[in-house]
Length: 310
Image (cartoon, rainbow, N blue to C red):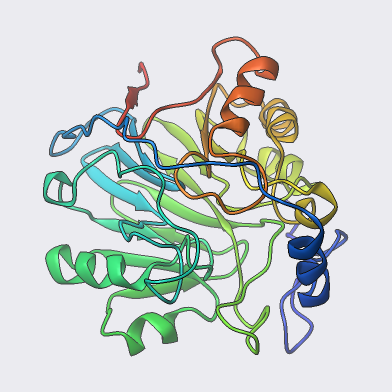
């Protein structure tokens, strides 16, 4: 079985054989030359209360890339964020435009938290500290991120490189490539890794793509693990494409990834809560509805759940 390609030059991580993320001068050009599609707060979420656990694969979209995966008695949370802003500051930065689909007090016990990378909409320290205090779950992170969590009083942290696996009692977690980048400030760009995760569960393969541009890694993941029973694929924050194309997929590309993976069911993530780019809050969902293949690629509202048949 082929190894995933080299992605570290000794100092910084990079996307092998793929475009790299645009730099700060391009970001300034983007902000000066384009205007985002207008979006406003949508008070349309009907929060749900998930069960304590599930023997089958049950997925609940909470918001953005935060998904509650329940299977084989394990409760797994991806990139959890309940904060009002995806930002280091609570008075500036991308503001929440929809409520979480599960209230914090209604969230069941969490056994595992999967963190894909260090951007503020995916690694929200305020939420992680609450989660650590309440449940003390196992936190799975890419290379280089354990130090940040431990510095903030969060323990039980396990780092994984692309290709690493963590066998657990009822599932095995594999770290897999994503085409993205990392940074929480101006001086730490690409000092820590980014990744997706594959979960080998009793009910089948679950793939959490996290943040990623389109690339050859989808074919590599299918070759290594087989077609996913469930894939969580990002569809938002893709405009302007000249700037975002290396790091985020447009809905049409997510459909292409779904087909390459040959996923039995895909669910859209990374849309509908925070406006991180120029595309509007619900524009990705509308475009996906126009190009998605039948009922195999779905969008869920915040708080909506799907249980996969055995």
